[in-house]
Every structure is written in structure tokens, then in C-alpha cells.
Image (tube, rainbow over all chains, first blue to last red; front, side, top):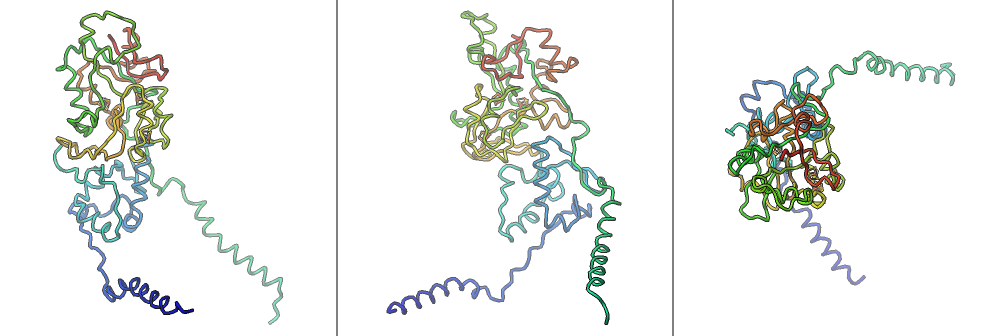
Length: 129
Length: 260
Ligand code: SF4
Ligand code: SF4
Ligand code: SF4
């Protein structure tokens, strides 16, 4: 038991390091991001599905779209209200949400997720060909 | 309070049954199709059993005749241009008879015109594609309409498909292609470092009812259509003309035919 001193002080140092970020950031809440809608998105009122669903589950839709378009060759999505969309991230989603930096990136950065969609999919389809 | 065990159980059972009434009723009453999203092909989608191309090489005399077609394809598909040959990416290109048809013909002396003619080569969308069998992730797969499709999302860059393809129709992205694009078609994605790419018979155009870009740029020198549909131009051209295909002895059954 003669190492007790070292073990205890080691533990204390370890705890200090581990808890430091919590102490450092105490009482400071990072405000949730405010995403900006483009005029076009505002005018639409509703996205492909209801807003709350899109907020939480848009990645599920994108995954479905990707599978359907690439693997099945089907490109049209009809939402429960009967409205048709061409399933395309760059050409449909980003047609309304043409402000990726103010929209997609805001939340993704906040949540520290780094989707690699943009490695291939082009960010703004609106510029001339 | 005179309530017996049996009565309690009966009441419990009844209330449990009552709780299930609403969900069951809802499920039976609801029309299963209503209120659910659907997916499907667009109205203009062109369909076929096996898409095929017939190239009338007699009408391509020089580089100037093939260049616009290559440019059309590479332009709309964001195919980058590399000076470094090793990094080269190509979906369609021109080559000489002796390269395109090596092993197919025993001609020692070719007709002059044929020897000098540029032959357009691209992925043959083989009916029996070895690249599909080689791909461990099914990133390369054969669609119902015969197109051998790339799913860039799934490609892990192992390049088994490149080794398997006897036509060199596939290219690998050794680096991020974006800086090497002279201009970008915003309607089509680019690729990223580490994936393989090739001609897709313009699947994205067929979905909109358009023929492939190179066929359109060819102005009638290339026929495109369903190989098995007697009414299609491609079928009629192979019926009316003597055609060659590349490396048929390997049994991949190319769907690109050449009138020589
Ligand atoms: S030409 Fe090559 S890449 Fe194209 S389907 Fe045939 S084997 Fe596959
Ligand atoms: S490089 Fe990609 S497409 Fe080719 S075999 Fe590997 S995973 Fe499949
Ligand atoms: S069919 Fe389409 S993808 Fe293939 S070479 Fe022609 S233009 Fe390019």
C-alpha cells in the first residue's frame, strides 16, 4: 500500500483533466442554430413531408431517394398529398434550399455531423451550366 | 367488497380487449395506399429489355467527326481532363481498328479507310458483364433494362471491376476530380477520389425521355434502342448491316455494335 499516494494523486489529476471541459463550459449553453429559409422555401410552406419530420428524419428520405434513383432507376416521389418531386438532392432539395451555408451547414456544424454528400453532389444548381 | 378473483380477471380481459378495438378498427378502415408516399418512374422514362448502340463507323472519317461526341459526353457528365495519362478518365474515346478489334479479325491487311478510321469505344453495357460479377459491393450492377450501372455511393475503389473489364472501359479517380473540371454541369454530380466511373448509357437522360448525349451529337450516325425490339432503330440496323462487336470470343456479349 505504499503506492497509495501516487495512485490517489494520479486519480486526482485524471479527474481534473476529464472534468475540465465541463467546468470550463459551465452555465454556458451554445444557442441552437437558427437556420435561414430562402424566399422560395418560405413561399412553399411545406417541404416534401411535414416540417417536423423533415427536421428530424430528412436523412431517411435522402437515403430512400438515393436507393430508389440509383438502384431501381425510379426518379419520381409522390408525397402523401399527391405532389410529385424529382428525387434529386442537388436539383430538388437545393433548388429551394439554395443557401446551403445558412441552411444545411448551420445544423450540421452544430451537431458536428459531416455528411460527405457534397464531395460529389454540387452545392448550388442555380448557377448557369 | 365482495369481488371474486374470477370477476377481476374477466374485467381485466375485457378492458384489455377494449383497448385494442381502436387500433384494429383504424388499421382495417384505413386505405393502405392513401397517405403514404410512393415512388415510381417518370412519365417520360424510356424502357427496354437491353439498350444497345449501333455505330456506323463508315461515317466517321477523322478526329473532327468524333471529337464533338466525346466532348458532349464528358461535358455533361463532369468528366475531368488530366494531362497525366496515368490519371486519365474517359467514358468514351476514339481508337484505331487494331486496338478496338484486336483478336476479332484475322485481317493482316486492312482496307486503308478502315485502318485510318477512328473507332468510338465506350462501355459495352455487356449482356454478360464480368465487371458486375467481380464487384464485391454490388456498386456495379446490371439494371433491368440492360444498363450496367455504377452506384458511386457504394464503390470502395477496389478496382476489381477494372481488372475484370476486358475493354478498359472504366477509369479510376486517383485524385479529387473537381479542380480538373474546366466547367461543371450543375445538374449532374461529380465524383470523388477513390471511385471508379464509366459510361452509363446516359441513364439520367433516358429517365427524362432523351437519348444518350453522344447519340444525339452524332446526328444519325449512331442508332440507339432496344436490341430485342424489332421496331427499334438499333435492332433494324443490326438486321440490315453486317456488324462487329469487340472481343466476342470472351463471351461478355457487348451491346455496342459496329458497322464497318
Ligand atoms: S464494357 Fe467493361 S465495364 Fe462495360 S459492362 Fe462490359 S465488362 Fe463491364
Ligand atoms: S472499384 Fe467500385 S465498382 Fe469496381 S469492383 Fe470495386 S467497389 Fe465495385
Ligand atoms: S451513352 Fe452517354 S454516358 Fe455513354 S458515352 Fe454516350 S454520352 Fe457518354
